[in-house]
Structures are given as structure tokens and as C-alpha cells.
Length: 136
Image 1 (cartoon, rainbow, N blue to C red):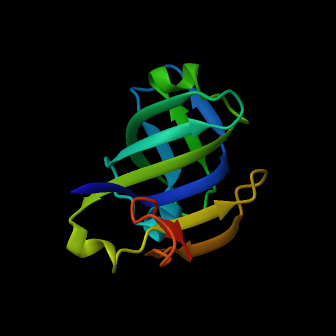
Image 2: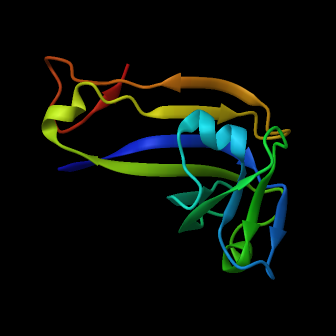
């Protein structure tokens, strides 16, 4: 088995950070649904501003709210106004790789409006090593 990116929300702006909340990271439920991340599913968050990385789980916030909220201990590393990348991974058998399509959503990084959504496709060129998957 190999591990691949399954879903990514790129350049979301954090709208709230709450140290007193009991952990996790809140995401607009419409955005969760679009990229296929379920409530309580494990996610990794990468802070573009300070380079911090952490693993937590997703909780759903009201659909259409555009909210991304860092809670509990995560709020020490991810503050209101920070721009983050949210990633979710999966493990695939070699036979599944050719039909696999990660979901990638790019936000505008300011108002949390969706700029682009695409489903990637892993493929290999004849001249490239098979260990380096590329998006087409």
C-alpha cells in the first residue's frame, strides 16, 4: 500500500481561534462535503504564515458560513487570520492508483471564497520514474 493525498483545501483563512474549546478544527460543512472530508475524520493542517504543522480532526460548521476555526491546543499554532492548507490522506493498493482522483479545492486566501475545484489524476510519463506521481 502507498499513501496519497485524498483531499486538500488550499489557502483557507482562519476566521476564529479559541483556546478554550475542546480541540479540533472547524470547517464550513459545504466545503467539507465538496472535498469529501467527513466530520471527525483525521486531517493535517499546515500554517502558511509560520510553518507550523499539526494533526487533528475535522468538525463541521454551518454550510455557507465560510468559517475555518482553530480550537483548543491547535489555537496556539493557528491564529485568526492565518492562511492554512488542510490535507486528508488515504492508503491505496497499486491496483487502485490508476483510477484514484484526489479532490483539491483552492480558496482565495482572503474572504474564503472558492477559487477553483478539481479532481486530480495521477499519471506517469514514459520518461519519468514511476516513484514520482504527477498531476495532469
